[in-house]
Image (cartoon, rainbow over all chains, first blue to last red; front, side, top):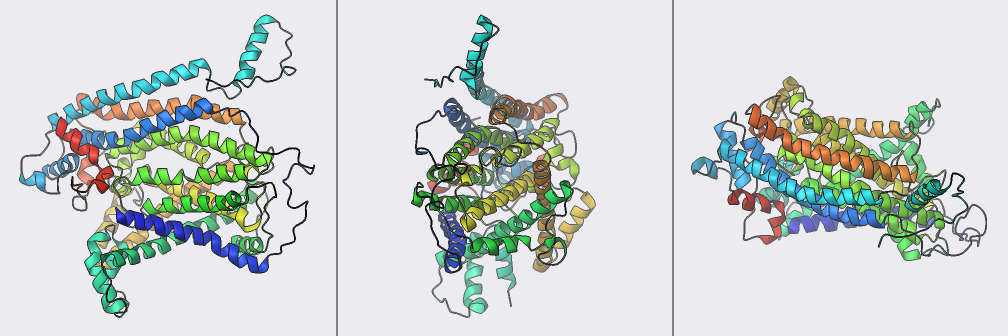
Length: 191
Length: 433
């Protein structure tokens, strides 16, 4: 794996040089005439009001949590999918003997040619059984996240303009002339 | 004079296997004995430098070409001519002229900005987009790092790009930039989910995360392309393409820059060359995801016409020089497919209006995520249903396993825990049942 590390290091260096070199060349030819106007942040031509390092409502808090769960789950899909793909390919009874022993080596992580020499060739029936087991595994695994996803959806956490929507629905239920725009948007976070 | 051994090293996936030959070549005729003490690590360093240079070309040049293409296509779609002057006909050197102009522009950073982070952000973006190309096979075996987890790690590295965007938005000290950066973060965390799920779908079909192997499995005609493997894969390609549009913040999902509402979004405060690196990285990432889509779904370097493909393979078996030639042909085909997809991305940008931010989020969370989940379940059940009814795993063509390459597979041994992520699960899973 040191080869990978070496590549990463070199790519990081090369990528940085790719940015740094034009910047350094540019230093020789570009002007440097700072004025207070140039160095202020752009706010539609008006003097900027206040700092931008402020607290504000991060709407996607729940979405970010959902992302972490989903992405961890999907990360586990990848190794599962390699095994399942190999199993379904092996379960095909039309497969030639050469391809079958080759796939068996791959599925069982044996050195190439091992299955052809010994009796570790996976039969179509065994592979089908493995595939069925795999489907049950992933169905249970996937069901957990889908139930959670349905719950989050039902709770309304996936709505970007959540507080306004609920306010609007409430106000419609109470009176037909509710003025939503006059009320400040409640920025409640899911706790 | 480049020796065949060295040529093969340039071509081959498995640099490590060719190391003795490479060392000999370097000692012998290539560096004329300048490096007499070149050991294995020295040789792999030389190989890595060659990789960086070659991949760097494929990072920079397409980006330049696509920036020009974007302007030209945009012009034509809007009934204008686009660039016409620089470089003779069609203004094909426009990107270079832009670069020369941008180098001379003043490099501004607002006083309110966090200067270090502000200047760091373009580096992060470029390095992430560049490093992702490390794992992509440009043609059969032409990849800097051939890995069994190629697809997984490529997506992981590419998604680091968002850090640079968020950093740029946060450190600028401008409210527009902050909004842009936060929108990008929201968009990325939601679009990563369908991206991951639709990227699993070809893995389920191919039974491999090795990008080279995934393409090899798609040889022998259109019916073997993963796109046409089953109806779910067919839809999955379009979902994947849509999601990659969003994860590259391309219109209609370019909420992070949204020049009509956020001035420039995350790059409002950037100027000159530093500004342009965000776009270099964006176009490189567009090219990258298009290559990935071509590799995963559209048969990679295969034309899809069995006669041509088998003829190319037959020619390549002649000698190293012919093999080199056929790989150049394969690369041209792959780049052609990727270029076509980039063209579609540009076409979409200049055709569809931008969505609103809540629509973007709803598109992902309420449509693309459920759709991709359903597609994933469909792809998983498809071969099983076929096996239990027809007794075969595919409808069209021969079984996928027939085309698995025999030789060039490395075994993950227990003694080397460092390589364990490559394929640890097959061993335990396969052994358990």
